[in-house]
Image 1: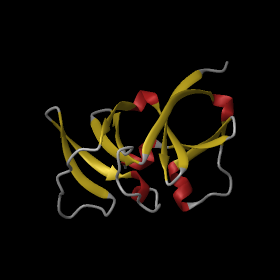
Image 2: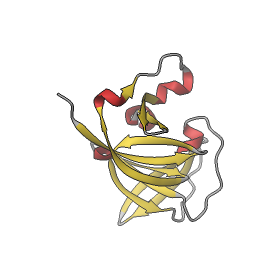
Image 3: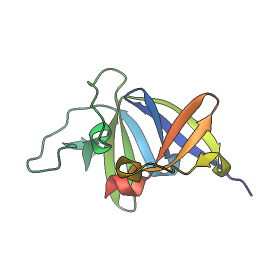
Image 4: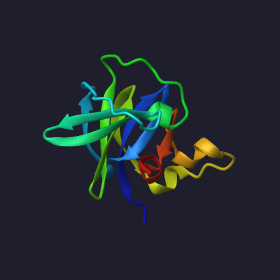
Length: 138
């Protein structure tokens, strides 16, 4: 049986990526980030999101990509699993769309940064890289 799943599609360095919508608690404009000393290079700091402290990372840097400059299109995608929230800075959020499990192709020849990629979704003329949220958080 095929299940329609919803994904949030966003852009990093002109490439489209996606995460399951069930893990996305909200999408917000980039706000002021408080820097925290002695954290990983991709960690930008923390934000106060309606009273909760949420760590924010540059998803580009986390995936080993070049970081784009922040602009009006930049967003923070807040993801959640169990009790953990994490803000991911992305270049822009393009859509929420549906996919069927059959549309996901497993990446074959990718290593290292491929660890973050669960599969590839083909939609129309787009190739969307489906991210593994657990690996990004840990």
